Length: 102
Image 1: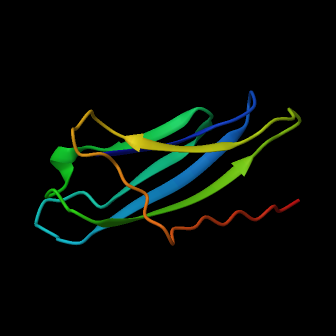
Image 2: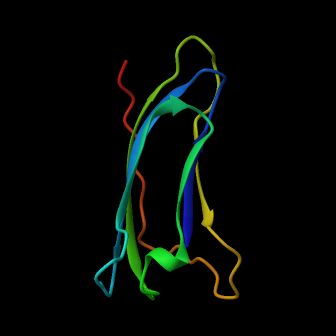
Protein backbone atom coordinates (compact mmCIF):
# COMPACT_ATOMS: atom_id res chain seq x y z
CA UNK A 1 0.00 0.00 0.00
CA UNK A 2 0.86 3.68 -0.13
CA UNK A 3 0.73 6.18 2.75
CA UNK A 4 0.32 9.89 1.94
CA UNK A 5 0.33 12.70 4.48
CA UNK A 6 1.10 16.31 5.35
CA UNK A 7 2.99 17.88 8.25
CA UNK A 8 3.42 21.55 9.10
CA UNK A 9 3.34 24.26 11.75
CA UNK A 10 1.02 24.13 14.75
CA UNK A 11 -2.62 24.84 13.84
CA UNK A 12 -2.08 24.60 10.07
CA UNK A 13 -5.28 23.23 8.54
CA UNK A 14 -5.27 20.86 5.57
CA UNK A 15 -7.98 19.32 3.44
CA UNK A 16 -6.91 16.88 0.76
CA UNK A 17 -8.12 14.25 -1.67
CA UNK A 18 -5.88 11.42 -2.80
CA UNK A 19 -6.74 9.18 -5.73
CA UNK A 20 -4.88 6.17 -7.07
CA UNK A 21 -5.30 4.87 -10.61
CA UNK A 22 -3.77 1.38 -10.97
CA UNK A 23 -2.76 -0.28 -14.22
CA UNK A 24 -5.25 -3.11 -13.52
CA UNK A 25 -8.71 -2.54 -12.06
CA UNK A 26 -10.99 -4.99 -10.28
CA UNK A 27 -14.38 -4.88 -8.59
CA UNK A 28 -14.09 -3.91 -4.93
CA UNK A 29 -10.81 -1.98 -5.27
CA UNK A 30 -10.57 1.34 -3.38
CA UNK A 31 -9.34 4.12 -5.66
CA UNK A 32 -9.90 7.34 -3.71
CA UNK A 33 -10.01 8.53 -0.14
CA UNK A 34 -11.03 11.94 1.12
CA UNK A 35 -9.58 13.43 4.30
CA UNK A 36 -11.81 16.15 5.68
CA UNK A 37 -10.50 19.41 7.08
CA UNK A 38 -8.24 18.93 10.10
CA UNK A 39 -5.01 20.12 11.62
CA UNK A 40 -1.67 18.63 10.58
CA UNK A 41 -0.28 16.00 10.79
CA UNK A 42 -2.92 14.40 8.58
CA UNK A 43 -2.58 11.22 6.50
CA UNK A 44 -4.29 8.38 4.66
CA UNK A 45 -3.21 4.89 3.65
CA UNK A 46 -4.14 2.81 0.62
CA UNK A 47 -3.69 -0.67 2.06
CA UNK A 48 -2.44 -3.47 -0.15
CA UNK A 49 -5.70 -5.32 0.53
CA UNK A 50 -7.67 -2.46 -1.04
CA UNK A 51 -6.04 -2.94 -4.46
CA UNK A 52 -5.50 -5.86 -6.79
CA UNK A 53 -1.69 -5.66 -6.57
CA UNK A 54 -1.05 -3.23 -9.46
CA UNK A 55 2.49 -3.16 -10.73
CA UNK A 56 2.20 0.50 -11.76
CA UNK A 57 -0.23 3.19 -10.60
CA UNK A 58 -0.80 6.92 -10.89
CA UNK A 59 -1.25 8.73 -7.57
CA UNK A 60 -2.98 12.13 -7.65
CA UNK A 61 -3.03 14.40 -4.60
CA UNK A 62 -4.99 17.64 -4.38
CA UNK A 63 -4.70 19.71 -1.21
CA UNK A 64 -5.63 23.04 0.29
CA UNK A 65 -3.59 24.22 3.28
CA UNK A 66 -4.26 27.20 5.54
CA UNK A 67 -1.21 28.15 7.58
CA UNK A 68 -2.75 30.76 9.91
CA UNK A 69 -0.19 32.91 11.77
CA UNK A 70 2.43 30.28 12.61
CA UNK A 71 5.46 30.41 10.33
CA UNK A 72 6.90 27.12 9.11
CA UNK A 73 7.18 24.59 6.34
CA UNK A 74 4.42 22.40 4.94
CA UNK A 75 5.67 18.94 3.94
CA UNK A 76 4.11 16.33 1.67
CA UNK A 77 5.18 12.83 2.72
CA UNK A 78 4.66 9.45 1.10
CA UNK A 79 5.93 5.95 1.81
CA UNK A 80 4.93 2.32 1.77
CA UNK A 81 1.77 1.87 3.83
CA UNK A 82 2.97 -1.51 5.10
CA UNK A 83 6.35 -3.20 5.01
CA UNK A 84 6.92 -5.17 1.81
CA UNK A 85 10.00 -6.62 0.09
CA UNK A 86 8.96 -4.84 -3.12
CA UNK A 87 9.86 -1.19 -2.65
CA UNK A 88 7.73 1.83 -3.52
CA UNK A 89 9.30 3.35 -6.66
CA UNK A 90 8.96 6.95 -7.82
CA UNK A 91 9.71 6.93 -11.55
CA UNK A 92 11.59 9.63 -13.46
CA UNK A 93 9.24 12.08 -15.12
CA UNK A 94 7.06 12.39 -12.01
CA UNK A 95 6.29 15.93 -10.95
CA UNK A 96 4.68 18.08 -8.30
CA UNK A 97 3.16 21.54 -8.56
CA UNK A 98 2.46 23.96 -5.71
CA UNK A 99 0.67 27.30 -6.03
CA UNK A 100 0.72 29.93 -3.31
CA UNK A 101 -2.51 31.85 -2.93
CA UNK A 102 -2.37 34.80 -0.55
